Image (cartoon, rainbow, N blue to C red; front, side):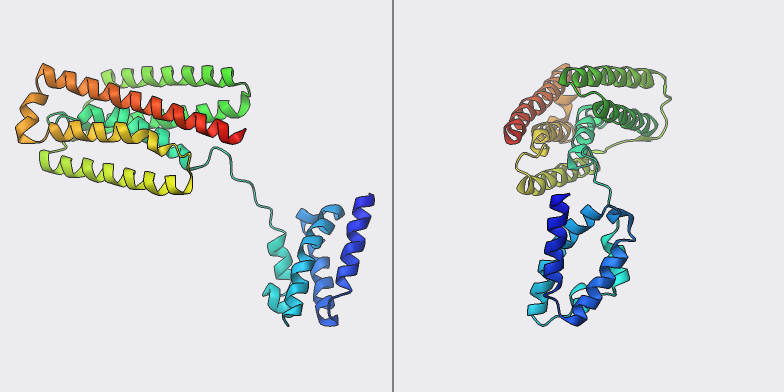
Length: 275
């Protein structure tokens, strides 16, 4: 209560420094702010007014009226200040795009590295639906389970269920909506995808040093290289042999390992940053 009174007295003293014209505007603004649900608590309102008054006094010294400073009538300004903005959920960030890219690189693209193997749009669409459901479940569990072990166990269960659902879908979904990535068209498509993701990674990493995006670059370019080898005439014959299949398998494993290794270092850097 003492703190509330002190702030109120400070606001009264600061208000006295306003010109009569600005005092009239200020009083009307305060009356309108009291009508906003956001400022139903008088203590909250007084703290907010304490933040506003010094800026208004500076504007007054610069020969600005309150009307000019706030740019609208008191009722309009109060309505704008009184808007209750919901904080953005912690999970809603660029990080959410990384699992989507990992899923694409680890599941979707490897299934069509060879030009003779088509995309099955019906199956791919269903796999993305499963993935979105799995992500929604995982995020929901993470919000409710607060222990690290519980979260890890929950995510493992969801991932295993996702893999099983995808396996069943691959065996049962009819081959409809077939799209072939041709030698030239497929090469251009994959290169453009790799360049765009790399550019996004560079842009995001400049703004967030511990961005997750660099973790996918190794897998991205390994997968792209394998797909290009399968489309270049000089090496395409090799890629349809058992040696080529082994190369694709090894490349996929190396890509997955690069995600795990680089991702582990990024996770450690993030943990150290929060300490």
